[in-house]
Length: 320
Image 1 (spheres, rainbow, N blue to C red):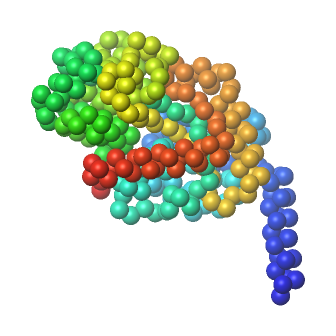
Image 2 (image 1 turned 120 degrees about the vertical axis):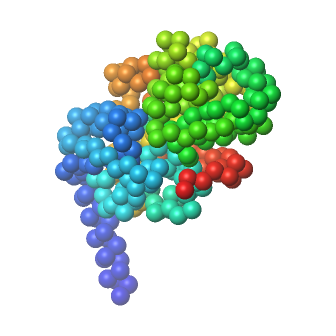
């Protein structure tokens, strides 16, 4: 029996090695678990185009939206671990969703192998020009003087915009009324129209409106200022310490995917994000392309899961 077991293990190892050497020999599915046209979709298509050229096989983007990204992620979690079904995950899926949803269709800690963080964006706290506060310090004072009177929109309950706002109110002790929308675009449209007072959102969503003067940025939730908006102070410079909130999108594979395939995919993803045309394209929207290692990406996910978990528990946010 021991002999048969050893032979079986050898056969499995040999098959995995052969599979890795011939990988890929057919199209790869990269699932973007949000609607077409969103950041996950745009990044997936940009990276997929580069990987198609370097791998010699098509990388086909499939949009599977629903349940804060859980629907598409579940399709990857249950797929064969052979490198032919991948996930373009948001930060929320792998860090916040386990605390937002009472029932998850997979275990985020064991269902995936992180491959690489593709792009990261520090969030911006932005208000309509009608808001009297010109600085973050003044805004905090205004919000404290008018508890619950200021309205901030977000792309929806449990989104990074909502969580970024929750982190801000938790850090400052102010009360701001949250207005959830179905997506970032309608929230920003209402903000420009003056129907709400502000948002905490990703640079690509608001940066053109900031540059045109339609919106006023008060702070970037990061350690350092943004290259595109050098005059916008960090939250710490504005008097709010420990307020750092970012949104990112990275690629993961089903648990059990052979290490050699993970290594090959990481190599191709890192090469894609280093492409000068890619760098220039996304830098214009305030995104920083990353391409870190699987180990670095996994460590980031663990750290952010703990941090967002604390905020969600403290504020009582639930997606349902």
